[in-house]
Image (cartoon, rainbow, N blue to C red; front, side):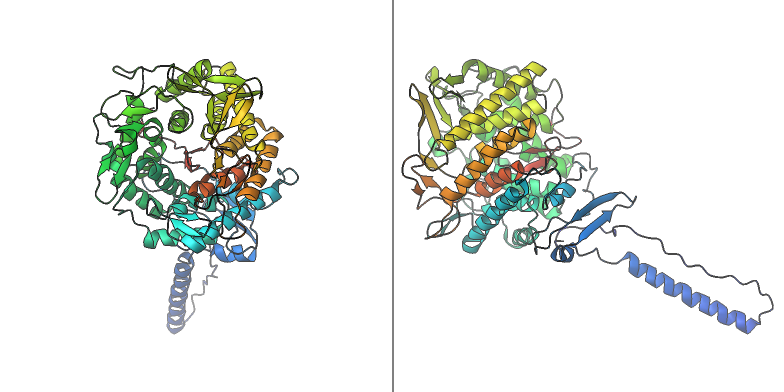
Length: 599
């Protein structure tokens, strides 16, 4: 057990101890004898009281010691209900998460009491539900995570990211980005020693007093999202306190004419601005991919004085609702251009993409609807369905030579046959929407799932058809079929993300088979065997694959790519889709019983 993680003040189960004494009715005892007996009785009662006090104040069982020994732990709550019964492996420090935990502070209505630790622990050994070879694949992916994180930790501990060739370090937000982004993956994989070291660093060294302009969007999805996820998984108040500090420091970005957040923030001074290259605009994905993080922070704090953290973020969806009075006018049904004016509800151009700069806005319409309780007439559901149905009407395309579907971009009033690997998240999003019945009819949900499966196949082919076995940044479709566009791979996760969702929703074995092929190709193509350490981006993926000497092992490789692959080969109860919703950086956030957010 991690000694710094809050623990229950109760033992697994307290057994009442009783002392049976034999009473005496002898009335002929002398006064002296009675006096001695009374003194002995008083001494005995004092002794029993001392033992009872010691017993009730014993420290919790050191689960970390048990993990080292590899024994079975059974824990019961105060009502005798078994909450953990799992054989933990004997590998030191990598054997699972330890419980029980205290309930969250506050009313508890804006969190969830779901027990997710039992399946996480059980996942560390072979399960009866595992098909042949699945456990070995799961553990192999886990070993790759350990290898990748150790490569970062050895060279760049406390810095943002590793540059594998050299090796060197890359700092751009200045807050140990890889540690924060990867910590919930450690938890899900049961890496207790690694998690303890990460927590110790956060407690002693993590500071958000960063005196430079940094990306509000990236800091939100990676850092705030990572902190909220590990808080939901552990209920360790350290993470919530850190999240509150970070969230409060980022609030100034919302001080615009419309409440649309700006792109950059100086966490030390509060100075905010738009990114220079956007010409003063804000990006669709950046303003529409912050709601889960800020709303979950507001909800877990569960206080009126901090509920505005969620209100500021959720208001963006209200502002961008085309059906509200004064709402924006869209050029295509449900489709939003990428560049917006932060001081008016006006688009700066008509470029539409489900890839870079647009992608996760559509993702969060669905996920925020799920997070807020799936109300039938919810604004978020309506906007999501309009987006998918509008995309199907105008951008959904089929390329005959390749036999593949894709989502076109829209530029200059016409479709552009370009498809980003970033847009490969859409297959998983459509599967998730179908699972939660976001569509208005069974037929609509079935059609959305069918579209998701078609995109899953396209994205698989983007990997499979390259000499390296890994995908280019984007492809184009023409009369010759699918053509490689920008031909580098930077460890992106979106394809395996979709395969995880498609497997869980359809149970079609092909998604695990394709996912394993992609995993093996990623390791083969990106692992640095000499001249550095870790896993590097690949240049010229289709013709002359080689490592990028300046490439970064992005934190999302640990936060997303390897996490989604691990979950692809895990039981469905490991972060179940009806209890958690993943932010766009693969940080699982508990779906609460209630929320401050408008529904």
